[in-house]
Image (tube, rainbow, N blue to C red; front, side):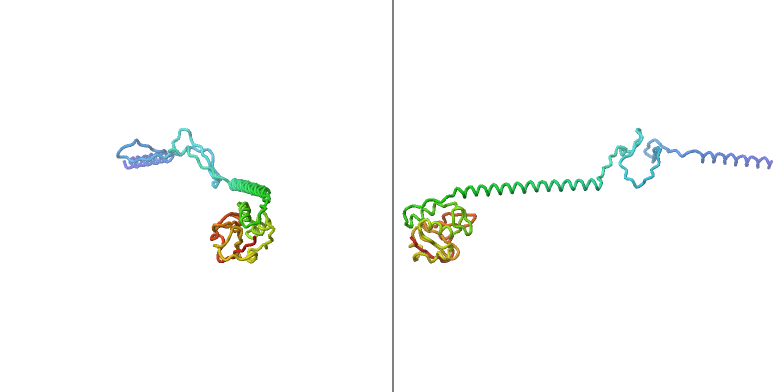
Length: 251
């Protein structure tokens, strides 16, 4: 009886061992359970692969998935394509060349405009021929003659209609009436005879000090060459004669 029991136990142990081996040999399978309000479950899937990736440092730009698989939308993920350093360098070079080209065009346009302006100014200067002075040699005639040069250009050191400074203008005007004057405003302070005050000044008198010279035209106004921006024109005595000045009468 005891031998029979022992054989039964041995047979049961053998059966259990065989069952355990079978369970070990079975492949692992993912288990899925239907959703339930009281059940927590998970699903795991392992997509099939046929090749082994060897270069793990290479940048991935795309991947393939099974047509019927669901990866939550990432199966259609588009990976941004980055630019190589050579492409970046080429773009920077092209941009620099474009900027250089635009700068060259702008400079050429400015130079062309400058040449056109200079040509126009030269043409105007060529048209500014000498104006024939009147036969009369009175101070009034000098003043009226001087006013015909309104708008003529100011050029430092000049004494011709193409361009003159303040004393050069006075020198030129009086030269047309046969009067020779120096080309410095300070020197023009001592020509002719003195006039005591502006109240006694007459058209054709010279107003001069160390920095400016002008021709008096009456009513507190003078005709003078003022500056490169203002050119030659009429101005009040108070605006162009600063400090003390001399009034001289030469005709």
